[in-house]
Length: 321
Image 1: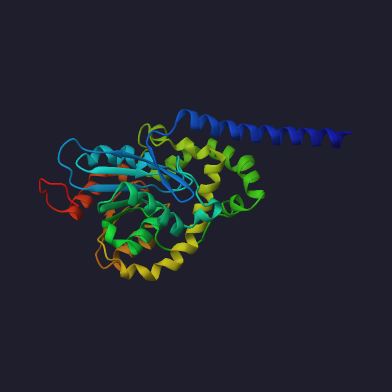
Image 2 (image 1 turned 120 degrees about the horizontal axis):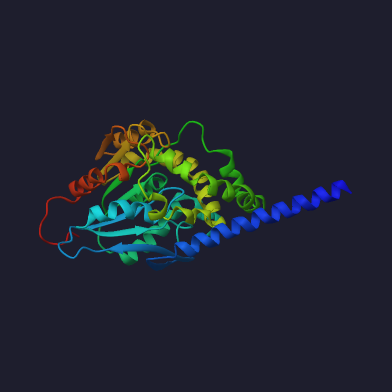
């Protein structure tokens, strides 16, 4: 009798946690609905937001976000600083309001790069400066390698570009497993993430304080939708092998590459990633920011804008294509 009662309690607890996870995702979507436009690509559509200056347009900048994030993070901090550019901030497949497109296979950064360029070829016919943060660096470097004719240059912000010691945390692999993964996501992943959002923000901003209002302006709670959380873990799990295979190609990069990172970044090693790709890229440049962690675009947006300006070149009074 006691065993049966415990079983009933366990079943009810599991059901309650799963319902809570679903509610967290539904509430996040209600609070932060899509604010931009959608572009159709193979298998679905990608969400992006665009801003265009009223005056001189110096060129176009495309922003690609990292893990556990979406377009709003980069747009919120860099958008106001890039008032002289056309700015496109796009959600990677499965993040923000972009469809996952090919399902689990879309975790591969190469597939994401291809999908992003499908969308960008439709909405950005001109050459552009590509800016990528953290995990977004894997797909961004693939774009630079495969489609150099479309870029004016590449700016990497604490970006993942190389394999690193320790590999991937076990739970990211579990989240991606068939059957078990969706259950783990709802029973463990989403509930834990909901309790750790603030602590997670503090870790990526350290040693500096979190930008006031970051969780809201970055629409970070969209990560709590179970499908988005699982896609994010799959992306992280797929990146290690991808960059391991891609490293030998960096010497063939044909566009200017500026790797900007903080010397206190404890999330993505400045030496393993940013310094290494700046050295390998024929037109590479390394910018190390003292006292800055994993969010250089928040700590020093003016440095990011300066790097973009240098790639684009002197003002001409005309739009640059």
